[in-house]
Length: 186
Ligand code: ZN
Image 1: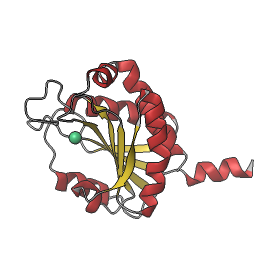
Image 2 (image 1 turned 135 degrees about the vertical axis):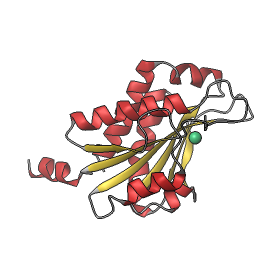
Image 3 (image 1 turned 90 degrees about the horizontal axis):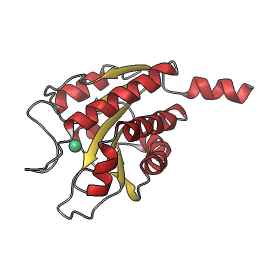
């Protein structure tokens, strides 16, 4: 019982959820048929619901289809530095090669690596996809972030098989629940 209460206390109290792109920034490659922005927003909202249902506070860097700069996104996150908070950015991938598919998770520091390692395998399982690695990369929203920050590339919209899953609301619900489950074990 002690372990259970310790687990609950160890969870983040607040999650800054960052739906990639928005407004004139559709996301993806030029001319890409399926833009990222509606799917990142929908997944973020589902993730917010899942976390709130489990008593975790959430802040979204955008909650509708408008543009938010990368600086504004990190400013929102950094307002919660010192809280027990983490940052999770939601994206979908694109590739010049139509066959490219799989899940990639990026992180900004060793604390965030632990978060990435909890989320990554659960996303792979939720989408029935493959592991393209947990990687350190200096993306702006990670590099300038004072919270443990991860960016999840939740599959390729340029791959017909993976895109067919991503456009399915039930699959995005499973995806959001998988991300929430990873966060709640952090
Ligand atoms: Zn993106």
